Image (cartoon, rainbow, N blue to C red):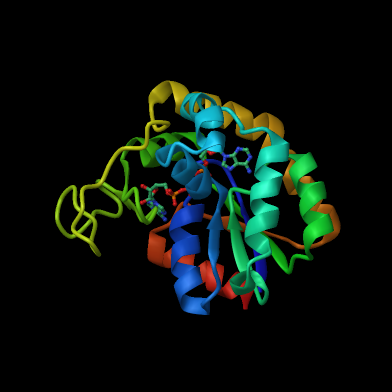
Length: 208
Ligand code: ADP
Ligand code: AMP
């Protein structure tokens, strides 16, 4: 099953991709996680893009396209994958089309007010990318990852200013992909405002 999760920041793509990846045993490929890993490890790519990412801008297409090409080339992605956060531009979608075919694109829908609430309460486990919310999806112990017990952090781009920038970037550069994939006949809209369990049930139905 080859899937793309499309939608604004904070819509729940990463949370649902984590759950679906376990359920279907296919890799969850988040370009955001890959890029944050590069920043953390201070690779050449990481150094180049740190400021852009923290300000809520997009990493240049050529860089993200090469990252995804390399990742999709690994053997675990042969049978299927969930691409979360890629493509984000028409150029990325055109490049992806040359790399592989897709079964479905899930369009996570959530209004701006809810997005801001979700992003301002988001907490993450840096090493794994596991995501929590202080109110909507709290960890078992406050501030600690459920699996490793390590500290959770607030993402440096989950500030008010960066959230506003990311929403603007989403509207201008990523939202056009909705009609792009609608025209291809592979888009399914998913209301991501209900509880995580309810959204996951709808997601399972959408991909079955
Ligand atoms: P995205 O990957 O689309 O940016 P995340 O999966 O990181 O979004 O989710 C953003 C925040 O919203 C996280 O704090 C997450 O725990 C929380 N969240 C995810 N799904 C739901 C939901 N259905 N209801 C309430 N909060 C949710
Ligand atoms: P995410 O974890 O999906 O919210 O992504 C976090 C940040 O990583 C984005 O705001 C961008 O700066 C960068 N990023 C992730 N995926 C892409 C992409 N496909 N194209 C460009 N930038 C990306």
